[in-house]
Image 1 (cartoon, rainbow, N blue to C red):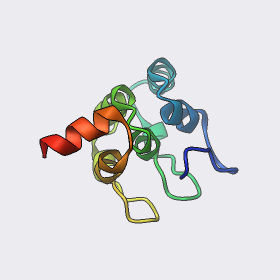
Image 2: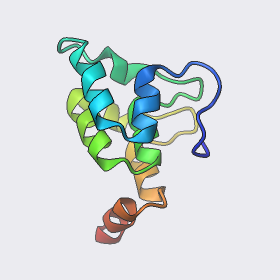
Image 3: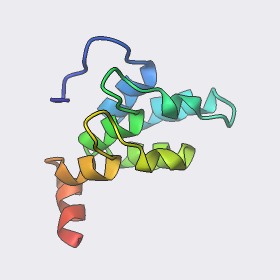
Amino acid sequence: MEGVPEAGNWAPIHTASHHGDVTAVQEILAAEHGSPTATWIATERGDLPIHLAAHRAQCDTLAVLAAAGQSTIDAVNHAGWTPLMLVLCADAPPARRLASAQ
């Protein structure tokens, strides 16, 4: 995950999460009528939408995804990373603030 979407099985929610498009994520989740299965769609690397948002420190998107699929916050991708681990390693101002508060 170097900031460029991998070829393969990205669904619209992956792209929206990766780019921090909160409105698109909310629309996708709303279309599911309270059953947020999109939050559990994994890429070939095992990344859920919340992993992609975390990697880029898309904090508003993270909040929407966490609220929709709270159990995804502890999900581990194929590399063994949780969303929290990814956001703390992200090189973005929100992540640096969060990391320095720890």
